[in-house]
Length: 404
Image 1 (spheres, rainbow, N blue to C red):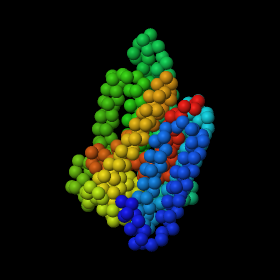
Image 2 (tube, rainbow, N blue to C red):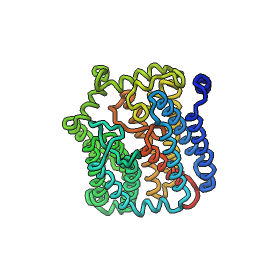
Image 3 (cartoon, rainbow, N blue to C red):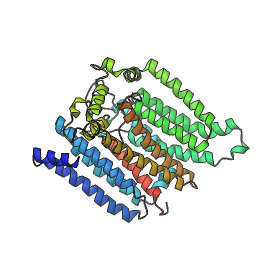
Image 4 (cartoon, rainbow, N blue to C red):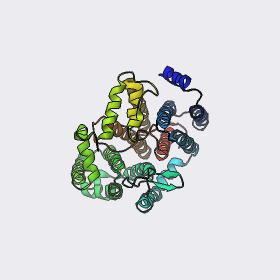
């Protein structure tokens, strides 16, 4: 595949944008690696290079889409890469970053919720389409999606609150008194947040929030009866959403039979399936695919673009890279088994990256209904990339033997 990139450069001549993107990525991975080693000499050796490789691969795919669609997606993504790298390094250098997250969980939660509420009145959509959900806050040409950092905030909030559950004398209290007094407040707060997201038609983020909270709940309590209640609520909520929310009903019907509506609502998923199939085992080759046939290919469907041009082998490599980050995150959680907050925080962040990846890949290949989430480190979007690198910075901080 490297030969395909070289062939493309020779065929199309000198491209300053591609060279600038490569230099920007090289500065981030080399400079960031040097600064990271100074801040945390004993950090996990796999997390940072694997995440940077995924980011660079995503940047290359976004550049390919930018050329095809004549839209400057790639330079914007490169700028957000620098910002995200700076924030990640700030987390690793700040010795009190994790304690600050735990101490100010309520301030962070209500600040994030306030930004989410602001999108109800001031929200916009970068596409400018009237029917598109307005999930962004924008100023001039800079757009920010509050639900992305809210993922980190809710995981931090849940981990901190569930830590109190683990320190309760459970055998000395009744089941209902213990569970309602400790688990009730965070459950109500998260339920309100999920309701707000569903009302805004941000169903993918709502699903991610709920699944992550559910798995954190089980990790902290090991109470199968609580999970059974949550599953029942999930099924009931799904049925209500299908009956009352047109977007949810449409996505479910597309999932069941996208080919029946290939010329309308199912066009996007059908085109992505065709792209994946045309990629075969080894791929069509860099720049030899047709990403402009897939709507929103740079964001929600970037996995299909990679599968078409890099083939099944390339798609599997991307999944293995993602799995590496997730498994290293779980390993870090085990290292902090003596500190429940840090263990739950690492678990939540790892589950977040895993669930997002599974949902976007599963939606593209029709294993699950489309959710509209982004692929961590790979998809276009400043808010998504920043959130992924914040999660990476926290995991790197937790992986170090340096005192927290």
